[in-house]
Image 1 (cartoon, helix red, strand yellow):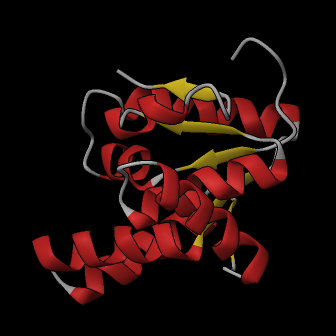
Image 2 (spheres, rainbow, N blue to C red):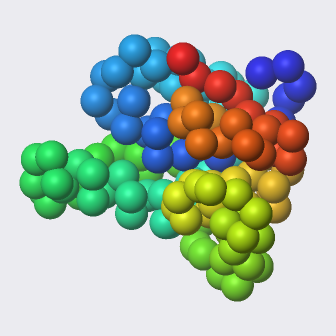
Length: 137
């Protein structure tokens, strides 16, 4: 990351890559470790956490999904509730772009908190001029 962010927002793509030990998993682990070392908050919306939960539950079981959620909390990732301000921000991104609604919540949180968004999801390319994105490969 070029400039020290105020916070780091992890989207569902990054978390699934981490949990499923995909090629980007090591990068995500490094970002999490660096954030802890530099005392940078790690954030994720409850909408994106729910998306991770259902993906894991669909692939394996609800018990595994619960364990994955616990693992994220143990990693120090704070789940941010979707209040009206965040939901309106997500609506703004959805109204102007062809993105999933969950992705719009991650984008809105990054914009609201002046955070860097960590993702490998190409759907975010259309808004990379609006929020800082740390691209995973």
